[in-house]
Length: 192
Ligand code: GLN
Image (cartoon, rainbow, N blue to C red; front, side, top):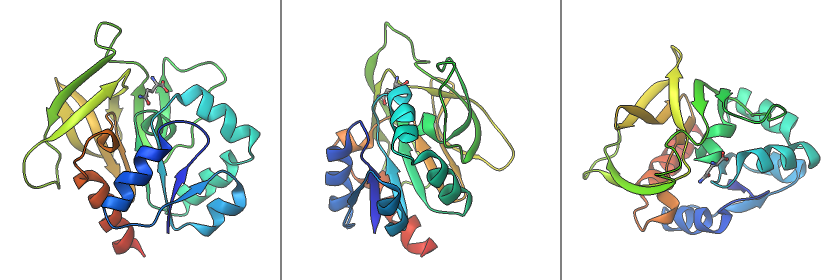
């Protein structure tokens, strides 16, 4: 079963996308719920709030442990920030789960472009580029040796994978195109 971290953010949209991709998602808000899922999606939203709530709900430690133990995870936008080993322009007390050896810059695409759409070619996704919805999106400033860049836009890395952990700067859950969720569902099946 694939969980969706339901502390904050666009949980419902990920539910719909995962369901369309053939999975049966469930919400994860408590450590006991995390223990019951085999994989997790971390939605878009606001990473400082999500980080704060993860601490309050006692989930940050268990999330770190599960990711370290190899649980497949997919994070979009704020979810990407949560999966970065290191962030730039975060709040001083902002915690991440980590899991991908990358440095992610919050709100990197800038204010004049707070929201835009662009076609993005993603390694491992056939059938042409996906419509990338970027909302106050981060970009990946740099990746370490074990992380693989799957997509760039305008010279910046916007999709990364490290083992079973996948992250995109943009929100495939907000489009009708479920190929990225399908890629994740396939990855979860292969891992199980
Ligand atoms: N800018 C947000 C943050 O820093 C992320 C935006 C999003 O998830 N669409 O958390």
